[in-house]
Image (cartoon, rainbow, N blue to C red; front, top):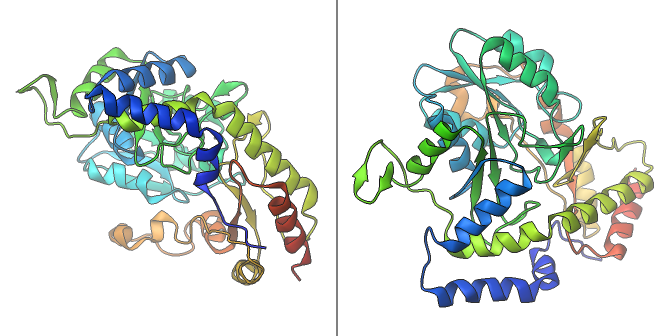
Length: 364
């Protein structure tokens, strides 16, 4: 049997009529940028999070960068970031001229809250907790630390659409929350797209200008901005995905529960789930001391897994100038060497799930 890591076409087929109707509606409208489709999506996404404002942007990286810019974070400033995240989280900090200060991860693949305060300096301006793989960070403690030190909290929710911590949605704790709608995400576009939600009206006004060349009125550019706007096609298509967010999250949770119940191999460490959290399972990450051999074994049996992420940010070549040596972030470096992500996606057939469980339990 061949088991792909993800088949996006199966989700498309499930809601084909809605996707096609949305695309045709935009094509026939004759309006393709900053129109009604984007307005409708922004209103729906803000309402979903009970937020005052939402801005659709080009991608998740832009969402992070624009949020940092809106809060005035730039040259000479520091931002605390967990090192086991996707590189985009750190790149956003660097692209603003600020410096990412990397800290290690906890046993849930999220930022280790005990490492945050020791990393704070007079130059620290913000913390970016990443709700990695679809599981929220321990936000109560992060918010407490941020208030104590007068820091901004910008939540990276790129993988955690609809996830909850103590009943409250990820993205509703901090000063801003940033989302990616890359096609594989719990809420996915059919291309690149992202969004920012924010409650503060001053920050919202600045984000609105920053994403549109620094302008509120055409040809009047009040600040130095950029071009990062979710187009009408992606807004319409992402609205379809948003409408089915609960179905998708529930389906992935059911697959994850089958993995947790079915995988009995002592060589495989199943993911830890934080108490009081609703995990949305964007990624089902297991750990194995012989990860590379496990990966090859699965491939030889037709199962296509992935590694998230083989090089932690602090050891990436682009951050070699920071001088952080191997061994500085032991948990994140261990994850880089042992993590393997199993197939999990909307539309995954039962026989494929059972086959993955069976083959993993045969690994010796």
